[in-house]
Length: 107
Image (cartoon, rainbow, N blue to C red; front, side, top):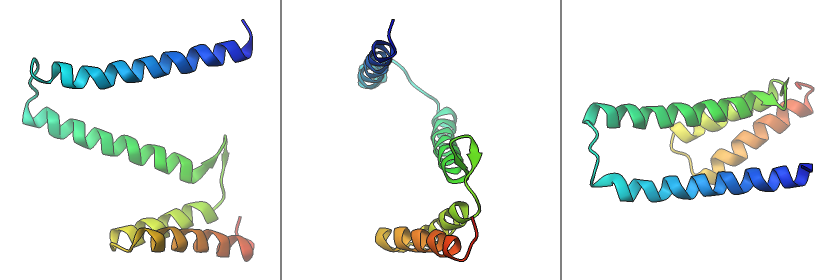
């Protein structure tokens, strides 16, 4: 099997699985009940997963460390977001921090 055919099969399988999961939610909602404790745990798990993906993207470029400028920019962006800055300001502050650090030689 060629590489492109494997890719097409993988994408199609992922798409089918995604749609089946999206349909399963409304279809099973009336048949299953989840305790409030489990619902809170699932909410926290989603946040933890999202933060783990964001941290990995902020720290690594491929398999290598991205350097200190990117994590510093992300940290400044997170602080700006926590302070409820507008999204444009968050993005500009994060990008300016990373670019400024790279301009002065911090990789």
